[in-house]
Length: 139
Image 1 (cartoon, rainbow, N blue to C red):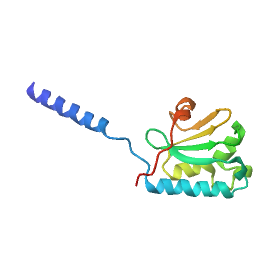
Image 2: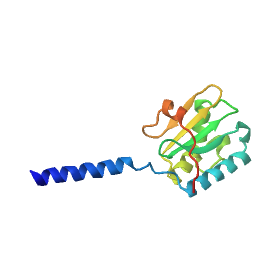
Image 3: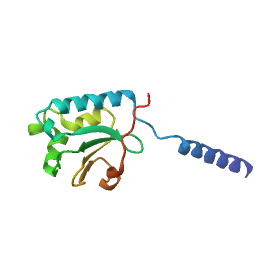
């Protein structure tokens, strides 16, 4: 019984240690990639949409694409996400390809004016994405 209790305490201690560690943060390469994406957006045919990308979420694993100037519609978001039609020059393969190649598992498109949020990625809800703040590059 004593060995079982010691093992239980050890497992509990390990679990507390894991849970108390901060969530993994985005790395410098991811922030550099997002800067490149923003540069591409500013030079794209659709630069007048005013899209701005950043990294956010509690684990800094969500690509936030904010639209402060234009209300994006669902069809537009689908084309931007997959890199089709006029949105093909933002990133080869679209925002989806960018996010995947930069280890960002989720994407949220957020409109400033009508507050609509479109999300891609398992477990990401519009309500959660609406509240996410941008992460900072502390390195």
